[in-house]
Image 1 (tube, rainbow, N blue to C red):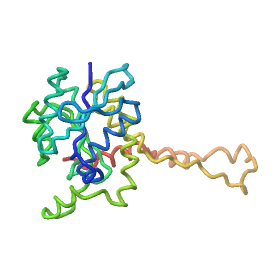
Image 2 (cartoon, rainbow, N blue to C red):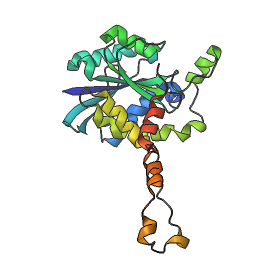
Image 3 (spheres, one colour):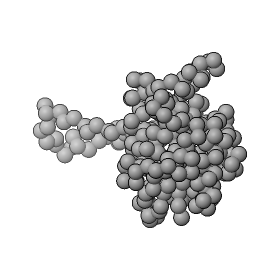
Image 4 (cartoon, rainbow, N blue to C red):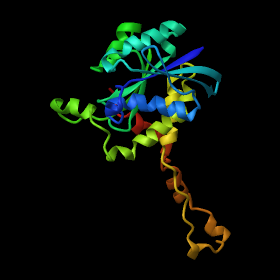
Length: 245
């Protein structure tokens, strides 16, 4: 089995830091984190080969960055998929999503292109049953500003979430082996979950208590056990997924 990990973007230094190129950024991070080969030209794009070690074993993976410009991404993806006979369920495409807030991530199989020209192009070449990882870049709030927003560079404020998101995607990439998409999304959420600080010790109150003092009253015990536990991971997972679309 081989996975085809596709990052969408536009080639050239001019586009390198644009929001529309977050798919390129994601697969580059995966390649570096897992020791993939250096890039070479093939399938009208740049490819890097490597191995992902997942919970169910090792699998070969090919990273592809189409250099056809976004609107013709399907030409490159279709060529690679046909050459290696990779079925749609083993093709995973990383790309930007306007309708997700910055720092949110969603994964799904199939569906429409939702106005994304790169996805529309891939649909036309291999069908729409491939796996999609959408990385939120936020909406500028007005239709007239969409093009400048998408083709604009990530801002300083984006640095509060972008590096951590890319690192989490790369670290969780082995969870893409197999068809359990929830496993990958869960792994990303765990990486992004805030670390719970250790409780501070009150030095003025460290003397041992009497046995009676250590036993809570019945009412106090009921009150304590009735409080819901704070689950930092569940909270982070919910924030990562965002609202239903």
